[in-house]
Length: 198
Image 1 (cartoon, rainbow, N blue to C red):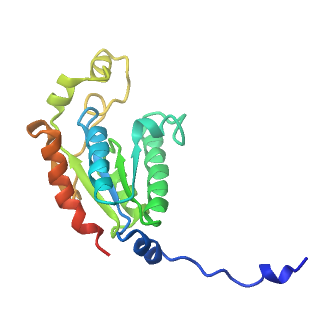
Image 2: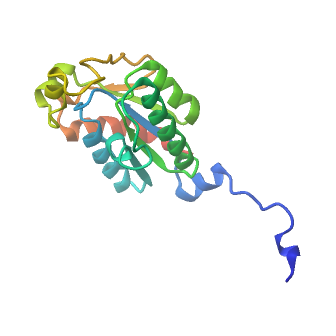
């Protein structure tokens, strides 16, 4: 067997090469907000809008990730940190391939948001605060989490027993409770689309 075919260093495909192949940059849109704020709904509607423009996307939703790569993690501060770390590392790898990654996670503290930004890199990290007020999220309570937290059935629940810190480094903010989904997505698309130019 000719071993010489395995000698030498391969010519690596650069991040720029991958971006040019897709005709857009890979970035990470990180949505932070209370449970029930509308992050997941907006993430998938924004993905569809970007897809319609020929943008390759991936959605990383916190609830879905907890059924897979983040399974077994709870809601203690250490588990939340590991949840964010794993998600940010995955998002970083996808974005380096030119993919626009939309992350939908509560990410309740500025420390955790800074961790995600440090891992992904400031040049590719776009923090979006989905600023639906807590009172509106609790009124919706589509998953019944707030009622259970109020009754003490869920410990360490953001907004009830655990704090949610107002984002200090959010590039954008939107309050979907005052807008339709279509209006919200249109605003977000107009914010984000210019950032994808190579």
